[in-house]
Image (cartoon, rainbow, N blue to C red):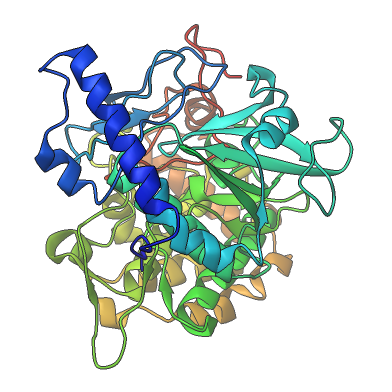
Length: 483
């Protein structure tokens, strides 16, 4: 999928100049910092250290949150230097060393005719010099800034005018980061669908690599489910689930070349002003198997809690791996719980394992419904959602439905009006829930659940094998306040 650098042109001259420059730097730095011939050979050409963007002053770091047993890799734009993040729990070795501009010439030429090519100065001005006030969020790939450009051009315009965009910067070097950048351009540059985030353009200038996306004003589904005081209404949850399912169905069954998304999770589902869901972050996407092949063999990358068990165990990737991940997200939307949460009581840390006993039982599925909804959900819709999640999470990949079948089941759910709060069934559910919690009235238990969801300490990121997070996740400031 990733094209090799094209020979000829100006590539040789660039490599020769870069080699001389590095040799001179090596003499100045001394023997400990001089690159070896082996490093140069492995780099497939000249490798250039990534730039220092003005703005943030926090280093890249990885740490383990004891409350969630998850590695959280947080990369920031560094003033001093860009440091590759290393997660101790990652199954993917960290790749250090920079990326050659010549190694992306093929991708640049292939996609230049349909994507806008920006200069670095244009994006610098569009984001107001990457100032903190323009920061939308950060992820493993880099920081994302809000910017404004011409409707049909690349020139920056006054904030609040023209076309609003999200500009994502690459802030770490290495082969993996380069592959993910190319994958983003390759897939989103060639795929267009109402439920995929639109890639507006890109910047390749010296060692700068940036991507420009359409701006999604409501941010990520993760923010709405886990970081807002008011619960997301049931009908909107179903609308989002349907839109995300349509996006996956397009990738699996309608695209010219089938695509396996591989990193389906709440932080990668972005929402426009009308809560239409769009899939973002295609850095881990892979072309599906071709011909007689049943799967794609690849390194295990993705996100704990979302990755299909057979993929984690064997590295065999299929479209049914995405279906499993969709089932996890559907459970999160239904329950208001994270896929992995060590703050929950024993036996409830893993959402899928906790939910399995309730998914297939008609009289117990209500235990999965987010208590903050307080009965404002469709009984029929919740039952259908639980049954669909049960099918998507089947331990047998072949028994999982196609995403087109998932879309068919979800289609009517956003419009169902049989609200639980007005039914006798819901009253009996409340009584049974209260009894199971050991509280005769149930009110205090409901309040405790709601308080936890609002104020309880939540993990700030899902554990990622690869450096991925929502470009619209608000980063906590050092003093604990979100930006």
